[in-house]
Amino acid sequence: MKKLLLPAALAAATLSAPAFAQDRLAGDTYRPDLQVGQGHWFVAGNVGRTDGGTADRFGSGDFHVFESRDGRKTGYGLVTGYRWKIGERWGLGLEGGYSDLGNLRVRNAFNDDAVNQRDSENALRGWHVGGNTRFHVTPAWYISARGGYFRASDNDADYYNSVGQDLGLESGGRDGRNSWYAGVGTGWNATENFSIGVHYDYFRAKSGDLRDPVTGIEFEGPKRSTALLGLTAEYAF
Image (cartoon, rainbow, N blue to C red; front, side):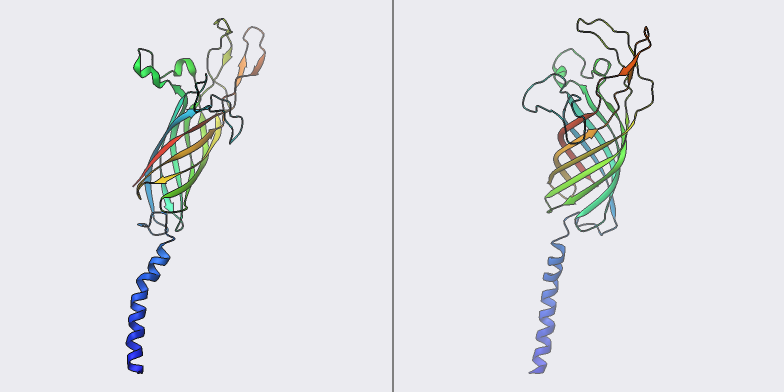
């Protein structure tokens, strides 16, 4: 009888090993093809609607997504980086990229006007570098966050009164362009390498000083901090 029990026990152990391994791997939702400590490169891009400079703090912004409003322009961003798998559900990485928050007018692609309105709009834009993290709740669903240093564009621009007359104010060329950005998002992992989601990003920028060359009086310029709500796509290598 004992001779029969030993082979039976070994067979049971052999058959249960794959099932046990599958139970452990069930929680491995972040890039199961990688071991903890390994990493991968990624590229990502986002496009959406800016708040027109109404965001005065992270989490704010008046987007009016489903209606047309002045000041709400198309914004976009491009980023690349490297992310390490630090846990079965977690990824942590570094990124660098560029964002333009309102200098594009997409509808001009169908007429003779310029699509890039940088000269007239001078909307916030700049390079950024920082960190990012991803948490894969399930293999198909992720939550992400990012943030870091943002080098804001200069506030050099022409300012006009209500009848279109140039006010002759001096702006730009001053310190204060060093700032920060932060964002959160969630989305769908279509495959282990490709994902798409909805993200909110906030780019902080000082207003910058304006100076009247006639009187010498200096005062704060218009708000420049801008938020972007849009779609993000990422390809991970």
